[in-house]
Image (tube, rainbow, N blue to C red; front, side):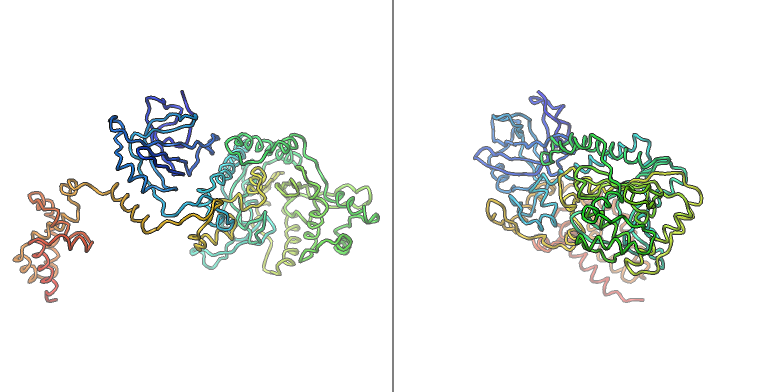
Length: 637
């Protein structure tokens, strides 16, 4: 009979274990322990839970430790078992060796053939439950011990990233890593973090806000399909869907149109849904995605930016048409909509921010299922190609829009993609317009056009499609989480800062079953020290026959006679040094014919005052002490 592969095997997988013949070693954390006279039952789980990462449900093993003097292969004495049960506590890591079997109800069980070993004791009292959300987020290691299901998000993230990489590699994309530290922040309209490097102390550096401009330099250099998955940093606020540090995925492909980018997006999300479904059996906490999988099996709907807003506004303002954004009164006409619909006006109220607020009010709520919002006004996408859109049914104006699409699901943005602007002349014009809006945002006038990137475009960038998404939001989608903090291993920036300051590290916790009685840490430390000493302290025979380097050195020095020391006193400082060198050189010869007792060797070498008081110094030790005093009184030349 065979068992499924499980994380508890250290020596071999359970698929290769014979239930009768094979013996195995289990390493895991103690969840519970019950002692009943001559037998003890230990429930062992694993903090690593690697089976979840491999797509196999975790197995809780029940370990039975019995005293049976009639069987030589089970040399567990009753007093040792009683001592072990008294010392071990919930949360300790133990190593158990025994035979794998099943108990009466068919669950996996290990019949221990030797006394379990505590390999990593815990000094903290592991509670049965944690109810304080703040404490849980700021002590994620403890949270994962008490609530093992919290680890499922980490494994799901791993599998989703693996599926994304497989998707790109099958389409011959090359994965690269671009610089995190940059002299200037480009690729997105965001406030960057600023820092300095020791080597370049007079140059202000930025943590990247996006890898876009470096990846497009690779396109110019001839790498025609490239992608990167890595961190980005934006010095902005923290909320349910935003964190200053986040993970982004971007790819760029030559000769790829906007329609192709949207098609690739649909294919990628279908593949991610399959990857999540395959892991759902091992992670019961994952949400049911049946409805979502049905929605993404079809072509995603498309909503054009300007016609959608115009149709929504005209339901209450029949004469209103989307204004020509090139006209000076465009902002005034847009603000009329804000006033009529009682929409909060963003500050500063520049054109891109106003248009983004209109989209959030009129378009994004329509995107309950996966939906693309396409063809944004040019001022909202300075890095995208733009063109004149056909007039709407209610206006003859041809608006200048970008070849861009955003994927929204349940009113939340997941993907941004567009055809890249490859004209250095048009790119410079759009950068200058973007700078004008950014100066209105933060009041900074020192920002300039990214001449380095414009110069790179002058070498010729072929028509290219670019695509980007927030990895953390994708994990939120498939994990069924509402906050970005729930899919980050250590939460948002606020939690990370609190963790670094040590806040709430020793806060007592209460569980659903009531207040747990806190154990005495001092007694626990004594038990831990005793366990460690028992496992690591050498036997008396080894201590006597195997001298340490320090004891050899002490033995050699103790063999120096008082007469030689007096002669060395009268010698010059250099002669004394040479004499000492010669003594050390003859270390091996001196110790070969000399056997020292453990008491005399330990007396001078062990720093412990307790051991020194317990072991009286020998005659040689007294001579060495006198020698040291005489050397100190030696006159200086």
